[in-house]
Length: 103
Image 1 (cartoon, helix red, strand yellow):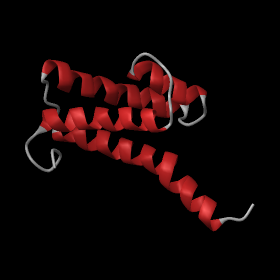
Image 2 (tube, one colour):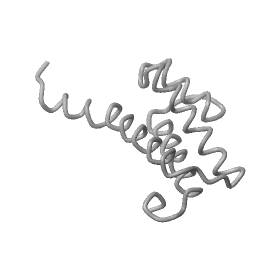
Image 3 (cartoon, helix red, strand yellow):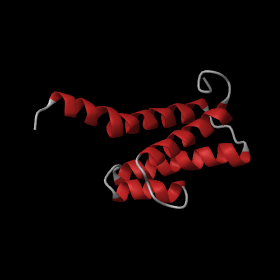
Image 4 (spheres, helix red, strand yellow):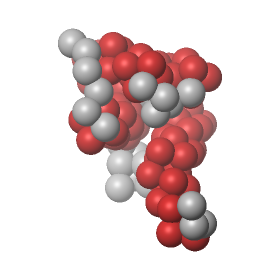
């Protein structure tokens, strides 16, 4: 909803919340989102290049939440594409592979 309506601050906060949710569901450890994303890299849930990009989205979300900074539609659209890709890699493709391929 925040992506399709003129609510760029809420969209940025929502993207950061999605990252927090993945960390929580995957039981990432760390005192903050930065450390939790790095923990998911260390655990092999995320790749190092994914984490580099996700830290940029984390920063975008922090600016939205703490500075009420709106980001451009282009930035938010790209950030959403990236988060969707991560969700696909972490949840959807492994489940599909598990159901489709016998071991």
